[in-house]
Amino acid sequence: MTPFIAELIGTCVLIVFGAGVVSNVSLKNTEGEKDPKWILITMAWGFAVFLGVVISGDVSGAHLNPAVSIGLAMAGKFDWALVPSYAVAQTLGAMLGSFLNYQLYYDQFKETQDELTFRGCFCTAPKIKNTPRNIFSEAYGTFFLVFGILFLVKPALQIDGIETLQYGIGSLDALPVGILVWAIGMSLGGTTGYAINPSRDLGPRIVYTLIRGGKAKSNWGYSWIPVIGPIIGALASGYLFSIL
Image 1 (cartoon, rainbow, N blue to C red):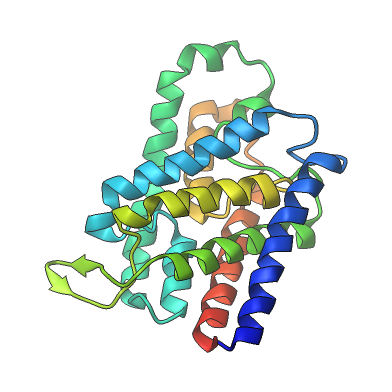
Image 2 (spheres, one colour; image 1 turned 135 degrees about the horizontal axis):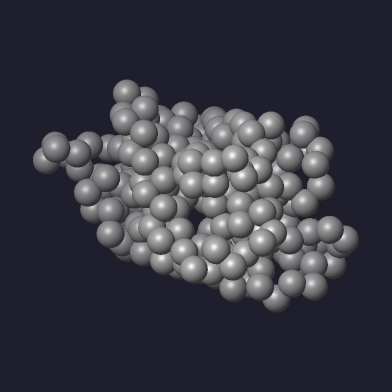
């Protein structure tokens, strides 16, 4: 990557996030519009990633997201053969986490009459339904997530005691990755609630459906978008990184 390209990409990222946060808090019908809760939500998700990475980073590389595994594999930094098992573990983990959250807030869930608010504690939904744009939003946010991770982390992962060159997010990288997720939420998450993670959305959506039964408004017609969008973004970021 030449200095010219580096300055071009660096300044582009600067404006993407800077203009993104202004748009999120200023434009009509975004998650950040006149809602101070969005700061708390995005901050907590960033810290959640930080803690998840600290706990699992030195063992698995702490991808915590099938899109991250796919993006790293696309960039030649992770073994494609490991992607399916990682994706299954990530989805099961997301399901377990959402079920535990339901148990913690069980009484509050019982008091919540609005089904869309109930569902929103499990999975995402677009502020404005527009399938091509919703896919683009999820791909866009995930692109910057994986692209940032590729520059943040180093190849220091071991699997089964065998030294490899596969990338993982170690404990020392946990804080910057958490900050990256926080920034994505504040700047790029205002359109769809930034799932940017197929497991994070699909797993809890399944749990919500099982819990609510006939009352569920699972919105399966939208559910494929937070799966496909992040995969597209991850593939694009991995490919761009590999050619840079």
